[in-house]
Image (cartoon, helix red, strand yellow):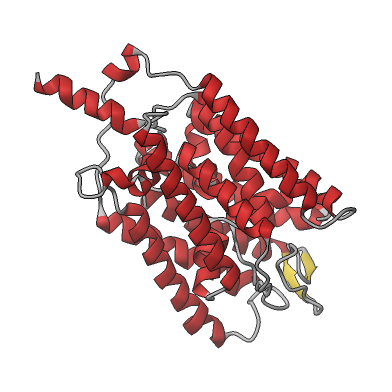
Length: 369
């Protein structure tokens, strides 16, 4: 069986660099990434996070106190935190080092800077426009829903753009180019939505939105699997499997091809999770959000650029970082949650791409006549 020397195979600017090495089988090493990511992806689907309406229904303040408010995201997030805390604080200390890596590559940065806040705000804005964040989008991609595919493609462009800008940043004042591009991207995005967002057609208004059933059990199970999958990745290979970091790293010129292999394995596992979900319940991968394609182009760009700029999203900052009580992660989560809440509420207030709820209201109104 082919063996490999493992040091710190997948390292970003936020991570410690391992200096020791360990001989492990390639099959076992990459298989560990695969299993952890597969559990993580299944948790996202079971918890309902691949349905973009969940985020929209949770963050829109006008839904509070109505039958349209959906607490799935909150329950998934809380369950994931509990499960990951058990893995991080109770199970991990039992192992002096990861099973198949030289040491734990746990983020240690404590600085709070503009790129962290601005990137998180961009992510929150993109999340509000689409209801999707990187991990669930990669799982739902297998459903080949047009809007989700558009989002994933735009997400990749956003990642690539930020990595290119980051390379230029290193030659200038740190963060200056990123901030300028982020501002330009925000202005261009707002203009694009204003010009291209069209009202729903009569056919769209007549189409009843699929019933979105709330299941606390599924949310708890899904969230627990997410937290367990993240913890398992840390214990087996010493890595924080933050989805935006994993995927955006594929676009980084500073990461060697051999180090990108583990990231490709993680993405492959997410795709397999999507195939499994598609087989048992195809509706979990269907995008029921009635919004123009332009929302997914803009949203994907903002999420890709923003999460790469902030070095994390709901898995890396949200679950892993908050479990460790990282100040950077807590600031990031508060920023992208608040931005999503404000954007979702304002968009609904002005009926701009108000999405599934407008369609559902229309259907209910027609049925009551």
